[in-house]
Length: 465
Ligand code: 6PG
View 1 (cartoon, helix red, strand yellow):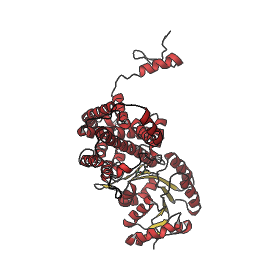
View 2: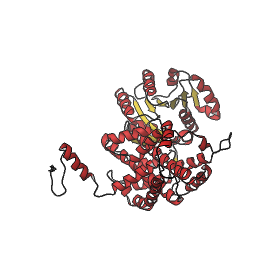
View 3: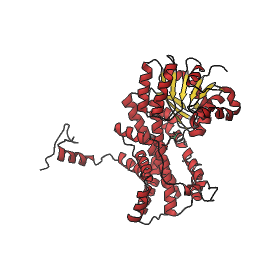
View 4: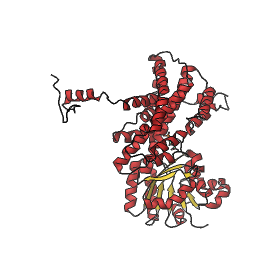
């Protein structure tokens, strides 16, 4: 077989799927894996696509099988394994060769690796890949952080394997070094908020109105044909409709109510705070996952701490509106984090293009993203998405539903942390005169921090004696 166009290192779920996707698009793909016994079964299962795959059992042979300048895609767990593999492969590479990290890396690591490899004459690409196994196999959304030259080399392959929205490939170089992984991290933060809000509405129907899983699944399935149309609503409906083969009960009723997390949601919140931003809906979602995992505390508290009867009359139209409004606000917070990072790191992120490449392939793909892309396209960096005419109109039409749903949930003692956080942000941001004047007075009172006045310029102190 001819020298390979690209080498994929790591044949886990995502690596295998991307290698097959590349092979299907006609690229010659060298493959290898740390556990060498995974390689042969992978090639056997590839069927006719095996003709485009070149399996290797050692790193040295794998690198030697690549056309020069080489392109190597690492699909391995984020963190230390990436540093280890870079160290292992570096002596085998020549100047101009390219390493791509397609994992969910922390963008700070990507910036460090990028600077290090750049200085040594290699190209390093930090590439966020979204869409799970199916996306990776048949078309993911990809967020690339790299130099322009590295992108020019990767682009034909990336565009060929990417999801398409119409004919537009859902991949872009969003900026240099860590920009791609940063954008992917925020994508995941938005994903956390969206998943949490959907789960909150599920909880209202289950605990406040006694709906069974299948009934909620049918409702969500219906919503997927309206303004909430999205992969996550569809996935939620499918999960709710699934029946356990062993017991005949809805599968969701058998799943332990403790959510895992690998870190990207938390990183979004950490980076947002470092940038002086608040992504409160995303933080609420990360926090809710943390609370979900203290099951023993919740079990104790359920018997000790009291609340009102969990009883509400569900208005499903309001709930649909609440989810749409919450979704817009969660996305808006994510885009605000991106805007702040773009300024801080000098990335010149094109928020409109980012929304466009999230319209297909990725986990948060939704019909809303098409509206957001249109609103963000051509907007000035300082423009607030929620103030663009189309998005403001959507909010004005749907926030009343959000407000009623959050109000009813509070009255019934049912938790809606992400929905209520998004509403609190909405109400804060539309308050022309807020209440921080009192905070400034308090700060001056106990710390002589000083304050600005509305009626004259300068810095002042109060006489609080
Ligand atoms: C995607 C997903 C994917 C994965 C994340 C989230 O965009 O394809 O976000 O990257 O699901 O790792 O994982 P956690 O929920 O475990 O943090």
